[in-house]
Image 1: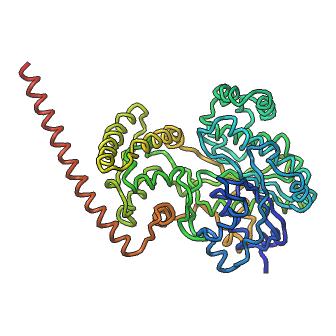
Image 2 (image 1 turned 120 degrees about the horizontal axis):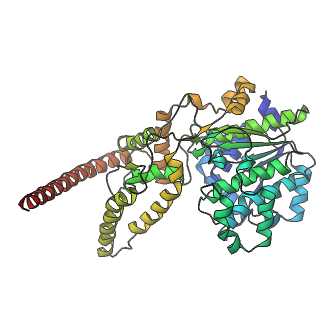
Image 3 (image 1 turned 180 degrees about the horizontal axis):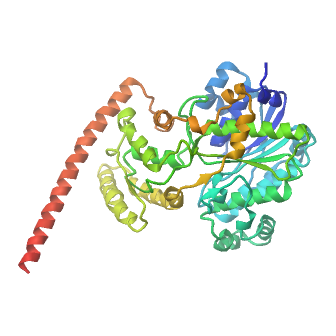
Length: 501
């Protein structure tokens, strides 16, 4: 017998954007595994010469769909790709496909976005804001529409340290309609030059254009059954469909991997600040649950005056500090060390922006120079200094988010969970208060090793990793002793020199 959520999705047709992204794949997998939807149309663009059908066919080998295909071997046949691109005007969708979507779709999940913080403004505006407006216009043509769900980010209002589940249009320098009108009148180059004036207090184009997209929904979407989901920083799966699955090198997982490889040794992080991290499978479950609630309200004629907003972040009763996060990362040295490391994993966390370049010079640049010099001598291409340039650029962009603490109100999300049946709460779990962070990161590190490092955690592989890390540990501490001795000798010599004068 279907649960309430399963019944709401039974025989429904869904249109989903952002399907090939990290969260998008998990949402699709969960919907197909737990519900009997009729069809899922997804917006896909050809990539590097690969046809959209080929891109979807490759999913049959993706580990995230393994459990699904064991129980439902034909499940991926319910997915129909629609050619399009969020960078294009009107999403680049053909008229025939628009008519198809308008006649069949009941559920829209708009999750497509560029998540690069340093994206040029004209690109971020097109993908994150203009595409959202185009999706709303398309949704208004859908004759059977029951819900339009927009996946935003908890950091769309990061200029505030305490964020409620409501709209904040007052913090924008210009309303979304004016910014979009400007973008149509000027060249991309001119628009990018206007970035400092338009962004105002926002730290990057990502958070700014996501805030603009919410303003678009507030201005143009209130006549539709709309809701907004704002997840915090999304990281590896907790339990479903497999523990620790990850397919990208962004954010906190990039830090974990960099430390594990012995590459990242210093970072701009306030260890006392609170981290705002959420497992991707919890985010998929909230997406499905808040869509269900909006469908239910629409069917009962209880549509809200403004779209309801749902946050998902760390629960106040189960906080996670950056200090804890770093410790869990270092625990991987004993739990699941890699077999390919360039140095013993350690990290120095600094909150001072002026001290970071000095530490980075001695802990990154100097070792990187010698490492690349050794590569040149062996006839191989140097790569570490170039890697550090990218790392430092990324750390500077992430700086504001690793030094501050945010509190995200989750009353709407808590109420949503309260409305769900016991079976739905079990099937679509997202209770952050009960998340065991230590156990979670143990699985996340194993997943990072398997899915990013391509090293299966077999007993033999783990044994090799432990042997390597023990050798590197001895070399590391011997080098530290030598450096301390040299520093001590230098200070002693300098002191004697000063005494003579």
